[in-house]
Amino acid sequence: MRLWGMQDSLTQISPPRLVIFDCDGTLVDSQHHIVGAMHAAFGAHGLALPAAEAVRRTVGLPLAAAIQHLLPPDALLAPVLDAYRTAAISQRQDPDHHEPLYPDLLETLDVLEAAGCLLGIATGKARRGLDFTLAAHGLTGRFVTLQTADSVPAGKPAPDMVLQAMAEAGAAVPSTIMVGDTTYDMEMARHAGVAAIGVTWGYHEERMLREAGASRIISGFRELPEVVAELIGGTECVR
Image 1: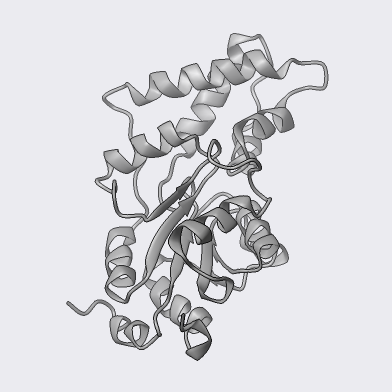
Image 2: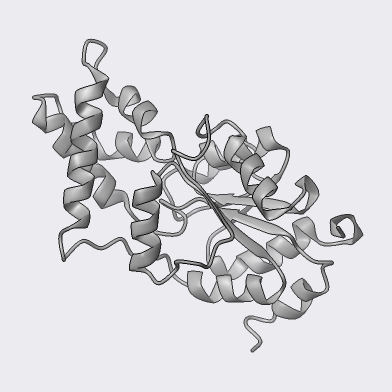
């Protein structure tokens, strides 16, 4: 099946190797879940609730680092961290819990896979949270490599998750792309030496993504296959 006229151009690549996606703010809109869990954690310890915008700015960092950014200087990290995890688990057990996929994601994954791309994820989520999200949307098994906060020594913006994803997928720097919505994704890609595509529907502004090193910016998933073809097409991607 031909989708959006991009499948033919992508198939001519020899072939594209690995497209790594961030999760929160890129694949799924989880901001209400994250902000709610953060507010529950801070409230449980009598701390002033951080502004929703401030919470969104930390999405993508390892959880401990995100909370540390939001805490007042004299507050203890460990109890708030534990409270966040408890709140997040409780939310996922709520039958009304919902983290919607962004539009056209599933069709885009189909196009990329049909063109020979391998798909991966690099996220600040813990593996348990990522597994829950993938299962909830029928995405379990779609990605050949899953890098999470508990799978590598250093989280974003360190390059570890991208490097580990490439190692697991057998990919190389010229044929790997990172897709994400935050500066942490762009910086992680830059540190790993791979191209980065920023998305405008997530939690950091387009200007910030460009300044952090985005190779391209897209405003919808329908644009992604063509941009992937532009960035990692050509004989230099033959392996």
